[in-house]
Length: 87
Image (cartoon, rainbow, N blue to C red; front, side):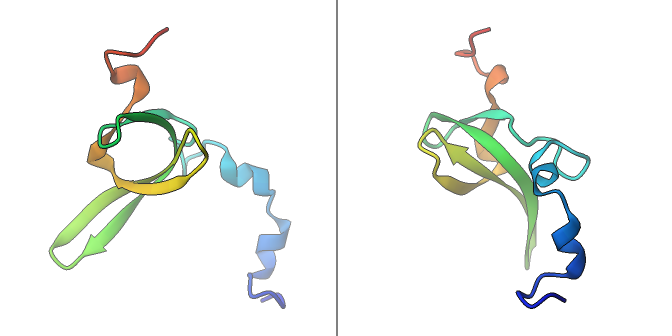
């Protein structure tokens, strides 16, 4: 461990690689439509939250103003799957 509490291998990672689509994070940067707020945003990552009665998938997204938020995966769709998508 380093003095700041991060594992020593963390210093050697290219931090930009963590932000690119990959096997771990294949949906990074996908334009999404938030059904709750009816706004467009970007998907950052998806993750599974474990509850006592089951698991639920969530997404971390960013809105147009740059505010990060978490939302159930069922409440967002890829922007290209909406009727309003312009090519």
